[in-house]
Image (cartoon, rainbow, N blue to C red):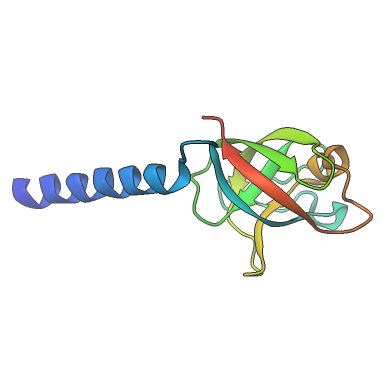
Length: 125
């Protein structure tokens, strides 16, 4: 039983180390670049995968692999506007996008009219 627990913990530690290495580079702490979209007001009040409730005015985001509570800096690469958000959901469902942000974050990033934009995603903590 002890061996299984130790091997499981070792596997988790190695996985975390691999993700950190993939995300880091010598010149940048950006972990991903890709397409972002946003949750609209129609999702207000829906339960998130992390157990909370989506509030359009909060600075939150959905990411496929990052754990709930991860703090991110999202930068719109088209206008250099940045926001800090907290991962509170899993997604996006479309494989074309790397992240969905709240309506408030999309407004600050300046892409509500376009619906999507190219972003850089950086882990803060």
